[in-house]
Structures are given as structure tokens and as C-alpha cells.
Image (cartoon, rainbow, N blue to C red; front, side):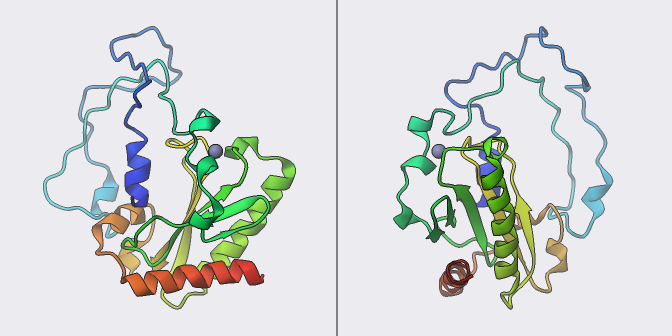
Length: 211
Ligand SMILES: [Zn+2]
């Protein structure tokens, strides 16, 4: 599954969620007008925005009283914690790096995870320091690919309880892919060639191993 699909699917309440769309009991500090269609924002005219034509904004749904569970909220059901190192591109004592199972529109998409069942705010000082070092190393490795101009580093945390930090490579020269809409372009563009994708992943894993 590609990046945008994985993040977007997190907005779908899970089977154990108990959204109460009719309740007004929860007090929200910044209530927003719901059920009305705001006017289109200026970014729909940006070159990077992937869509054109007649657009309209979905009405904003009422906020739910309780946030839905995230995948892996209970560690015994956490996919990352039950996935062996063999499914990862690279690993060390405390971190592992993986890719989505198939190529997508971007030359590189990789995901860095702590080996332990931790979210971003749970990291120890040591883990946090290592995350910083690894983030810089990975950005440097991915950006050193000839086909890559920039690397976007993202963590949303809406879908999974086990920290996932995403690295998404913008292909060189494709200025239209600059900025936050690149996650959408990743699904719009045809997948990169399988051999090139595999070579890029092996290059990054080797960089981490050698560094
Ligand atoms: Zn986990």
C-alpha cells in the first residue's frame, strides 16, 4: 500500500471505535463550522496541486467524542512487533528500515521504525538522539541518488501506534511535485520500474550498513 493510502486509511474509524456523531457533550476549544462548504483555498491554483476542473470541498464532519483506536494500540496486535527482521531492508539493535511492498510513483519511499513498541513521544533520550542521527543519514543517502532532488520526512501517527517515520524522495527535475501534495502524486504517477526501485533500496541499505 502506498503512503497516501496508508495515512488516509487511518481516518476510517476501526471496528472498536465508538464515534458518536450526534453528541454535543464534548467541548472543543476551537469549534469550527460543520456541515457547510467553505470556499476553495488558494492552493488549488498552485502548480503542485494535482487536480483541476470543478472541485468542491467536503463538508466538515462533526468531531467525535472519542478518538478511534490506532493499529497496534495493543502491542500484542502490533504488526511491526510481529514482523521479523527478514522483512526489513536494514536493522540494528534498536532501529529497522523497511519499504512498502511494491514500487510506487516516487523513486524511494522508506519507513524507519524503532525496534521497540514506542511512539515518537515515548522515545528515550537515547532513542531520540539516534532518531536524529538516522534521519540525517537517511536523508543524505536518499538524496545522493542521482534520480532524487529532495527528501520529504514525515510522521503523522494517526494510523499506527508504533512509530513510523517516512522518507519520500522527490524525483529530480519534477518541480510540480514540490511540497505536501507529493504524497498524492506518489499514487497518481505510474510506479517506477521494479529494477530501479530495487536498486535504490539496496543502495540505501548499503549506505546505512557502511556508515
Ligand atoms: Zn509495535
